[in-house]
Image (cartoon, rainbow, N blue to C red; front, side, top):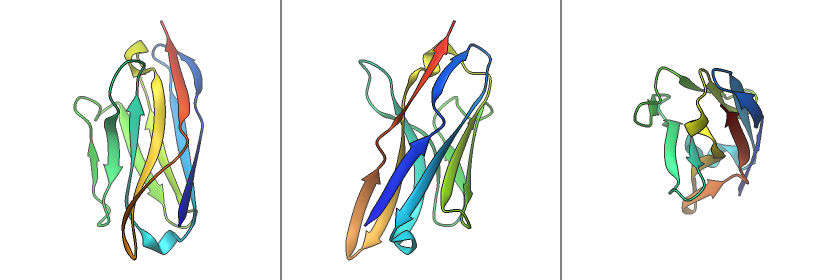
Length: 118
């Protein structure tokens, strides 16, 4: 099994920056793709950014340019650098991993809250 623990959320003013981290532990070799999702109050969870098993990154609509996803395999950590934050970026941000351990299994972290004040 894989465990994911996010950190780095908090309160920031409009235009500010934050870097989220997601530390993975457990059966690291079973991890394929990883990514970040977010869920704002009253809204559905949406894709923020992801990195596939080949190392290619992809982003949710309109987020590329402000957000950058990266992965440090030596530290088993996924990052999300968020710049030029807006109040509409306020949400709980979740780390996600696709794992293959016997079969396919999605793994989610507990989430970290990002609040952007206007």
